[in-house]
Length: 422
Image (cartoon, rainbow, N blue to C red; front, side, top):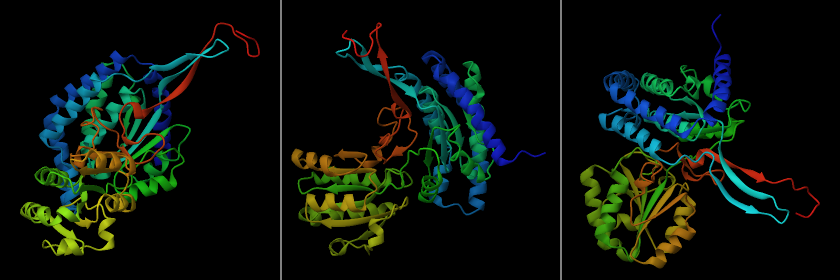
């Protein structure tokens, strides 16, 4: 009899729960050995990884997959290098598990503090990017969690090839195979099962399009760490260095169009717009970026008139909306109204303006004189990231090792009894 999707996912969940108890007690050395062995396995399997990825790319092109998604799907030699480097960097990071902080004596004589512990079993649901398989597996493993990874059907061959390398790494370190499980079925019912198994799964992290994340947030019976959009802004202040601002804005948009940290809206103070926008627009047009602007923008440069929808859109493409604003207050109001609480930057030489921007912009990352595309766990020194959270509970911003743990109280006594003096 063929195993149903629900039975298959239940089996994965049971195995993950058992494996989570093993990995929670694994030593830092054992976890690091698994990460280093996985890196070596990836390095030795470049040909197999590229061949598997080409199967996915060919199928994606044949099915009309959007260019932005094909770009995310590609496993270039540089991205394989990045996965290997990410594994090695995670191995070099301090292990958060077991760290105890804030131990203090209470009047009763007991000591109270907090210890960092794994979350347990983490389900990751993601689209297109096969390198997420390594990012997720490495961070979950180092933080003492078991993981169930469900990539998109468009990346199934790439993910299977990567999973084989992960399994070699786990075996080399003497850890159970179920510490990292990649869902083999492309049946969408697997997602529905994964997000409704609180007895086996402690947290869900979705990485993908807005539709996927909205569905998971709506239907999940397991806590979700998420962000819906990456509508990121760069604001060029009245006291900005305009040469610096052009470099920052250009990099924020064109570094990679398909990442959630790409700038989607450029805000420019009206006092510098005439000096700034013509040269800036020329750089974007030469790069092939379509410009959509407010009325004041269109009076200064050639741009498609922007609609209300443009301010609410994450393009993930060579399209940029531009708005001229009347100062810092209007810039902050625009960001808080239309932004997605992901990443927003100010370009200014005025420290007071920067501090106000930092205090009042309600985003998971706020930046000064640097492009929004730096919003990345690797760039933040986290080694890799499981995702970028725009939630305020339990983690916010790029989620690395510490974001995949929580704390429990530890209490130490020496025979004290409540109701008696120490």
